Amino acid sequence: MPCWVKICGVRDLATALLIEKNGFSAVGFNFYPKSKRFISPEEARFISENLTTIKKVGIFVNEEPEKIIRILNYVGLDYLQLHGNEPPEIIRKFPHSTVIKAIPAMENLPELIESYISKSPFAILIDTPTENYGGSGKTFNHQRLSFLKELDFPVIIAGGLNESNFQQPLKIFKPFGLDFNSGVEISPGIKSSRKIVSLKKKLKEAGCLS
Image (cartoon, rainbow, N blue to C red; front, side, top):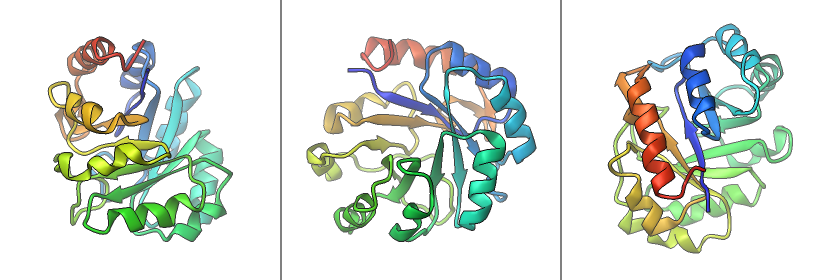
């Protein structure tokens, strides 16, 4: 069964068009000012206006809901990824089933997951714990969280995934989706066309993309 696959941290139109052409599910725009992959709403809107079929996701960290909604409408986003310490209740402040809530793979993960999915987000995203918001580019112990495969809710796996290691979470979790960022980069914020095309090939071989 095909997976929902997002390439995050996109900052230019050429990369976004390549991702769309290769059949990925979504592109992610990072609106967290401290991120090396930050993009302004104006730049993201220009890219968004030139895309036709791919879904657009905006990444936010502890941002005011009113500002998030303004950017959602201005850029033309399909989903919002909340990647900070946002409480479960905030999910209800946004249009129904538009929120992807990122949760670090910590000891109390089952309780955290339950508190968020009770508010009906689109999906939850499990990422590697880090002191820096917005992702670490490192993997986490997938075996330790094998219980996720029993969760009857869309789960997206992130955290240092690349063309060589995404198969492991596929086998362990059978997740709804996968999220790639640093694994398809030349350097932080600079995506590699070669890595994106190669990843598409490997995902297709694994049955994740058609």
